[in-house]
Amino acid sequence: MKCRKCGEKASLNMRQHKLALCKEHFLAWVPEQTERSIQRYRMFSRDDRILVAVSGGKDSLSLWDILWRLGYKADGLYIDLGIDGGHGYSQESRRLSEAFAASRDLHLRVISVEHEAGAAIPEAAALTQRGREKPCSLCGLTKRHLMNRAAQEGGYSVLATGHNLDDEAAALFGNTLGWRVGYLARQGPVLEARPGLARKVKPLCRFYEREMAAYALLRGIAYIYEECPYAEGATTLYYKELLNRLEADRPGAKLSFYLGFLRAREHMTFHEDGKDKLELHPCPRCGQPTSAPGECAYCRTWSKVRLRLGTITGGEA
Ligand code: Q46
Ligand code: ZN
Ligand code: ZN
Image (cartoon, rainbow, N blue to C red):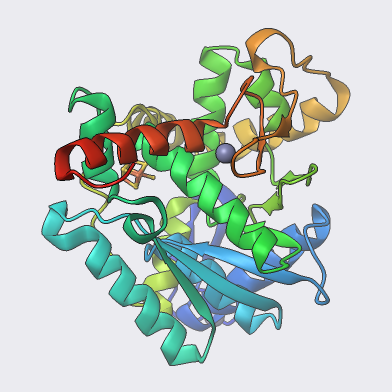
């Protein structure tokens, strides 16, 4: 297989795009395509200050690398979840994120959940969920809260995440299976700002996971290969597998599923009603918007954690 641009040996054959490229042309193609998505969905301009949520994985570090190469003003945010399992997952992903930032002289803000909220994620989950479930809902809630707060406090106009097409197609598949119209109404490359909520964008939403892995590898980015130890068995991974099977038989199926949804959404209206409807007001404790009647879920959950920690250690809640 030869590179379509120069005729040299191709490094990657992208059947879904009917495009094969050598290393050099693939490394140029990815930032070009990212720039096209940024423009197409009007994500941000070169005047904006962007905060990239970095996990130490291939997608978020590649996103940061691409934005930096394209000349955008992008800082990074790493949230240390305090997950020790899987050979010190948090420690290792933090080390790689810090090394990445240092190698490019970029600014990385590090927030530790334990320091901010009073306990590491697994510990807090064990206290509130009694070890019955995975810590993922608490983790997701905490990350969203801290990311939004960091974006607001730092005066960033936009928060960028490294979600790729496989992530987006799997989320869309799940939301469609359950006809969660509230989520469908809000799913897309851009989530506009609301009072107290930062604007969110996903510049890699048109890239297959495989393309991002190839980009990180060919660019020589050192990223954490292993997933979070709690990711195993997640429904999203099951949906990804199903979609991969479909993709193997019909190259391009994932992309057309997602892009078809975005096109269809322009002509359809998903009414956010019932429990999906998001009527927001500021949380009386932290000030972040919430749809809960009183304090936001973050404040309620973490005060429960601190209360239980206080009971155990004899300290203050
Ligand atoms: S939610 Fe769950 Fe992830 Fe948090 S605990 Fe790990 S798997 S990191 S995206
Ligand atoms: Zn080439
Ligand atoms: Zn709150």
